[in-house]
Every structure is written in structure tokens, then in C-alpha cells.
Amino acid sequence: MGRQYPVAVAEPERQRGRKRDRFVPSSSPRLRRGPSPAGAERARRAEQAELLASTVDTGQLAALAAPTLIGQRRVPGLKLHDDRVVRLLETLLHPGGFIRDWTTRQLHTRVVARNHLAADDNRLSQLRYDLSKLRAKRLVERIGNTRRYRLTPAGLKLGVLLVKLRTRILGPSPA
Image (cartoon, rainbow, N blue to C red):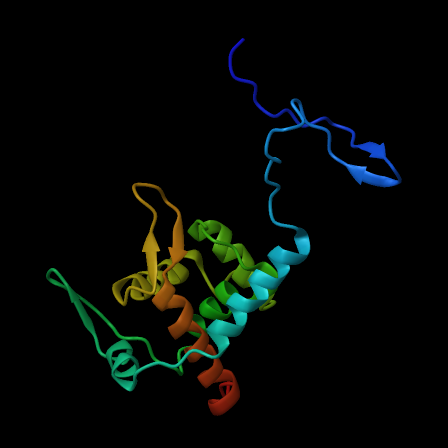
């Protein structure tokens, strides 16, 4: 007769006062369901808590401030007093709009909207320059041969630390 595979029925059947999924044949193992919304929320909060509690070596911070050589090109280091880079990192790490990958145009519209800036205050070319500095420090990586980018695990940890240092310890810039 061949092998029979479990088939989930669209509507659960009521049996003896409890809700139960019916499978054909009944002796087959239950189909595994995806994570519940509450479980996904717990996992997301655990990931955020781990990021906020992360520690970083001071050598890593010093390396971020130093210029980087990529081939013959010298890329300047990241400075805490640079508003554009901090705004960019804040937007990437904001939990309400946290996305896994993005294009520069999508990111530019998010940065401008989140910080209530005029388009002239933060141009797309400036954002791409700041993104190239983050790429040189390996905080952001390009996804294959696409025009999409994502934060690296080190970028998540160091980005959270830089944003926390800037906003909580140094305070806003006097501008």
C-alpha cells in the first residue's frame, strides 16, 4: 500500500470536550508546529538582554578609532563625537524598527524619519560614506553580490556599546 504521511486537517475536531488535531493515520507522530508568538517574543527579549549585558575589550574600542587600510585606501576610524555615525547605529539598533538586512536607500529613509531630519541634513552619499566606515571595521557586511547589508554579531555588540557610551555617558552633542 505504500507509506502514509500525516496530514493535518484544517479544522481541529472536538473530542470529549477538548480541542485536538486529527491526523491520518492516527498512530503517526504529531506534526511539529512553529514557535508560538510568546516564545518568539521571549527569544527576542533574551537576545536583546544579551546584547545589553555584553562586555567589550578596550582594545576593540581603540581599534575602532584607528584608521583602517583596505588595499591602498585609508578609511578613517569611528569617532564618538560623529553625530551621523551614532544616528546610523541608533537607527540600526532601535528595537522598534530592527531589521535583519537593508539597502542604503531604505536605511536612509529610516534615519531621516527617525531623527526628524531634512533630506539635506543627512544626504544619501553621506550615509553611504558612513556605511563604508562601518564595513571597514567589520561592523556591517554586504550580503553576497546584492546591494543589501546586515549587521555582524560583533557589529551588534560594539554598536550597542557605542550608542550607550554616546547617549548615556557623553550626552548629546552641543550643536
